[in-house]
Amino acid sequence: MDELKAEFPNVDYRFLEVDLSSQESVRKAADVALSWSDIPAIDLVINSAGVMGLQERTLSKDGIEMHLATNHVGHWLLTCLIMPKLVKAAQGKPKGSVRIVNVTSGSPRLASMRWSDMNFDKTNKDLPEDEQPNYEFLKLWGYNNTEEVAYIPLDGYNRSKVANVLFSIGVNKRLFAEHGILSLSVHPGVIMETELKRNFVQETLDAVAKLGAGGFYKPKTLGAGASTSLTAALDPKLAVGVGETHEGSENYGVFLADCQVFDKALPLAVSSSEAEKLWEFSEKITGQEFSW
Image 1 (cartoon, one colour):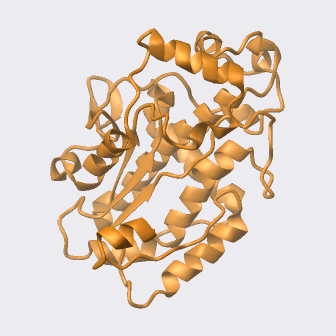
Image 2 (image 1 turned 135 degrees about the vertical axis):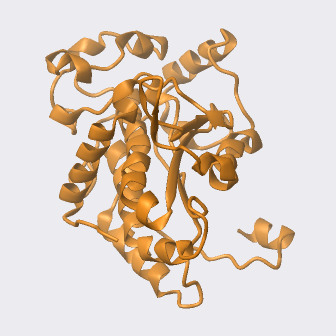
Image 3 (image 1 turned 90 degrees about the vertical axis):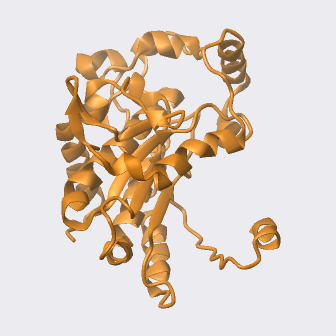
C-alpha cells in the first residue's frame, strides 16, 4: 500500500483486514466497510484472494473444507453483505457498469462440484460418477492412486474454483436485470510469482515445472495475469448478451481467459441449476439469506 501511495498519492486507500476462512471475521470486515460514510457506494469488487494446495484436509472454524471456505464462502458472504453499496452505485448507471469479478482458474475446464461430499469424507471411487475428479489430470500433477483416497489438495482447490464461476452466475440472476450489477469470472493464467504455491510440496512443484516445459501452459507475469481481471472489470462490451445460451452452452460470456470469453468449461461448471444449488448451499452454510 505504501508503494501505491508513493506512485499515486491522490488516491485514497483503505486497509480492510479480513480472514476469508472465518465468517466472523468476514462479518466484522463488512461492518467496517459499511460504516465508511464517506464511501456511500462501491462500483467494483474484485474477489481475488485464495489458498491452494493445503496438504492435509483442513476444516475452517465454521466446519467447511478450507479451500471452499476461503476461496468461495468468504468472498460470497463479504460481497453479499456489502451489496447495498453496490446497489447504490448502480443507480442511474448503464447496466453492467457496476461489477463483481471473481478470480477463478482453469479448473472449470475439468471439475465440477462435490455435492454429495463437500468436506471430502468419502473416497473418490465411492462418489457419483459425475462428481469424481479428473484422475488423468491429477496424475499430471503427480497424484497417483487417487481413486482410493478422499482428499487431494488440487481437487479441493479445483472444486472451490468452480464455485467462483457459479457464484457469478448466481449474482447475475439476482442482480443484473433489476439493478444492472454484472458479475464475471476470470482465469488469470498460471502466475508463478505469487504466494499461491506456498503450500506445494517439492513433488508438486516438479510436476508443475514439467507441465510448463511440455507446453501445457505458458506462465504469465503479474501484469499479464491481472489483465483479464481488468478486462472483466472495465470492458463495456462484456455486459451485452452475458448469460445467454450459446451453441448449447449455458451462461455464455460469464467466464473469461486471456481477456476473451472462454467457452471450454464443463457444462456443470456453467450450469444455472448448479449455480442455484451453490447459492442455496452458501445461504445454509452461513445461516443468512439475501435479497436486494
